[in-house]
Structures are given as C-alpha cells and as structure tokens.
Length: 213
Ligand code: 3PG
Image (cartoon, rainbow, N blue to C red; front, side, top):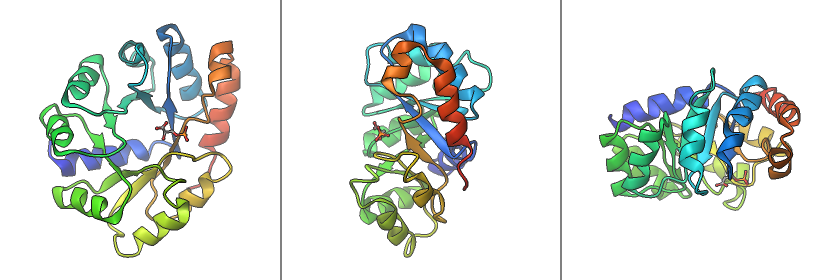
C-alpha cells in the first residue's frame, strides 16, 4: 500500500465520526460489549492500544462487532504491525513514526495514522506521502493553538489530535480546518468498563458523536 493510499483510507476512517475512542482493555471478555456500546453511540472507528496482554484478542473480538472499524494503536515495531494485521486490525495508529514502522505498514497493507509532534516531523511524513497524521501528544504540545499554527504553512496536512483531548476541549480542535477528528480515551473510562456499564459508555459515545466538525 502506498503512503498516499494509506492516508486516503485514514481520512475515510477519521471521517466516520468526530471522535476515535482510544481503548486500553485488560480483559478480552469486555471487547465485544465495549465495541458494541461505542458503535451504538455513533463511534464506529475504534483504536485498541497494544498496551495490554489481551490487546490482540481484544482486536479479534471487536472485529466481530457489526458496524465497527477496529484499528490497533501504539504500533511501535514491524512485529506489532504483523500481529495487529493478523488479529484483524483495519488500520494502525502510532505515537510517532520510524522508517521501519512505515515500511512494515506499507508492506502489510495496513493504513497507518503516524504520529507527529513538530513541523519537521510532519514535513518528513508528508514528503513520504502521509498527509493524514496524528498530532501527539496534542495538549502537551501546545494544543489547538499549536495545531492551528502548524496549519498556516502546512494546510495540506490533516490531523487527528490525540492526548489530553476531552469533551471540554474537543471543539477547539474540531473547529480547525486541519483537524479531521480527535482521538481520546474519555469515552471509555476504566471504571465504567470494569463495572460493565455499557449503557453509560453508549451515553458518552452519543455525546461525543454529536460534537460538531
Ligand atoms: C494515548 O495514547 O493514551 C492517547 O493519546 C489517549 O490519550 P488520552 O487518555 O489523553 O485521551
């Protein structure tokens, strides 16, 4: 897959809803009800971070949920890419980008949302063909103000800001012309997942899905 095709697919996935839930799931038994709750609230694109032992099983289970588009987050190595692809991930997300990681995603036909924190990183990715990028860590990097400023010289790059984004500040990003959607963990809080409060998660998802872009 070419970087241009990867970004075209990433843009489509970012276009599904204003928020991509960032999920850290410990128990694969929670995967299907959690995904179903988020999809029911209007958030079909789901990022499962590869930060728990269960993560690959979580992707496998979530991939069975109708209406969901499940991706793997925290991709760091080529081995992560292969495992995510094998588990059924339809897209990948990384906190940054290395040549090895980009090579692996392209070789494995996994559309990647590569992470960037500076203009130089964004330009390097753009030179390779990635025009859709994750701005990370968004709030710690200067937030919507910084992302807006990056958009002045680099309007052709579109972003999914993630990291410190919540219902409170999501609109600051979503109102920018270079923001396609935001990523955030607030729609699936650990306590609600642990309690199996799927209706509570659907309510949070509904609220997030109603954010204006
Ligand atoms: C992450 O990598 O955990 C994401 O950036 C989510 O960040 P958040 O928990 O601040 O939404």
